[in-house]
Image 1 (cartoon, rainbow, N blue to C red):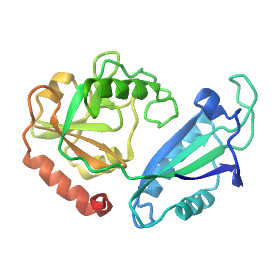
Image 2 (image 1 turned 135 degrees about the horizontal axis):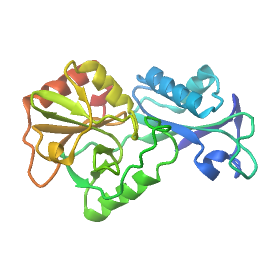
Image 3 (image 1 turned 180 degrees about the vertical axis):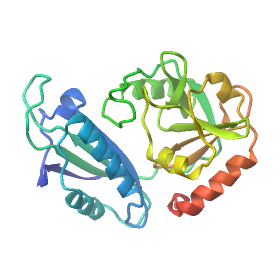
Image 4 (image 1 turned 180 degrees about the horizontal axis):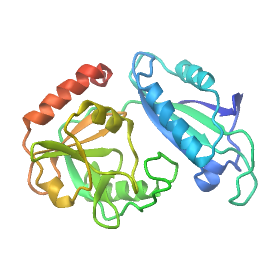
Amino acid sequence: MSALIFRGNDPIQALSVQDRGLMYGDGLFETLRASGGELPWWPAHWRRLKGGAERLGLPLPDEGVIHAAARELLDVRPQVLKIILTRGESGRGYLPVAGPSTCILSVHPLPPPMAEPLRLHWCTTPVAQQPVLAGMKHLNRLENVLARRECADAGFAEGLMCDGDGQVICATAGNVFLYFDGHWHTPDLARCGIAGIAREKLLAMLEDVRVAPVTRDQVENADAVFLCNAVRGIMEVRYPGSVPVIGHAALAALQQRFLAAHPFFADE
């Protein structure tokens, strides 16, 4: 793994043990797919990072400095770039102390391609409702960690998570879309969940999508289901429950449109 660390706009050699990202999860992160040494969705990811930083009151380093450093880390292979932004170093206590932020850039191999459509586990770990943080990709992801461990223990690669009211919110590492009644549907994330960049691109692409509460019964009885994230793109689901979902023309058409608009997802 290759990595760089910045304090503000200046490179540093090591992360402080008093960094608020380590102590309190006081920060944000982005995960981008790279192709041919480029970052095709950089503008969307930086816009979300900037929006989250404004909501949390985090100082943001110069975009040009970070973008240039990120490209220096990449080679021509399909790769994954992770950006972690924290409030930076401070002493003990929750009250933030003004100072430069910390930005960590790291490059990782692209995960192996999926051998077949997904079977999903229904996670018992709920997503906590917190409208102040809803939509942001903040560093406090322990719910996802526990849910992913649930999936692994049960022999599944992925699973769906619900909020405390039983409404479907997301996968452990992605957003969810389902097709029924002639329309695409995806959960409303006003109270919790991450508003993913792949989800954003798909919402812009779909004319008839419904953003509204989604139930487990709707998922298990849908005509088509898929997950999406910015690393893998669209991930078809075959088993959202015990009954398989057979390939649907609406999903096949959407996959074709998505790859035509974003062809770097075909690189492996």
